[in-house]
Image (tube, rainbow, N blue to C red; front, side):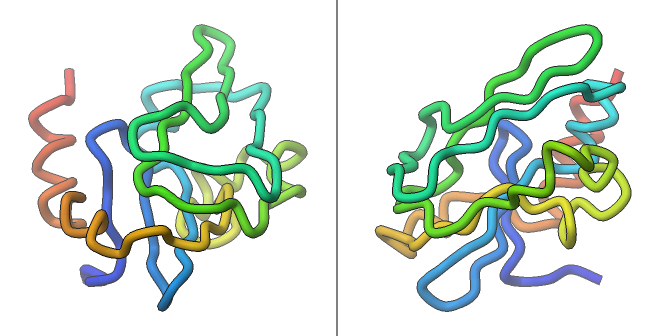
Length: 128
């Protein structure tokens, strides 16, 4: 079942909005593509996230991938336990696998993101 508050960027970050804040993470599709994660760099609390700009990185045994801001705002909290528990990104990507909580600068940016159904179709077109 789709959650209307869950949105996705084409760069595989998800956003779960809750009023004026939103949690941000990366999709299980991205985690499966990266495989064997070994490191994650979180953004700093109080730092600014901007749409399309790098806010962190995740490293697997085969590549380092940048994390891109799906929305703009101020980082209000980070999941400090996540770097020590990277399996949460694949086991519970929308629960324990959240990366940062953002105080949204402009809720209208959410309208530019894909719905869960649209994201599934997007991933099917990207699968190889």
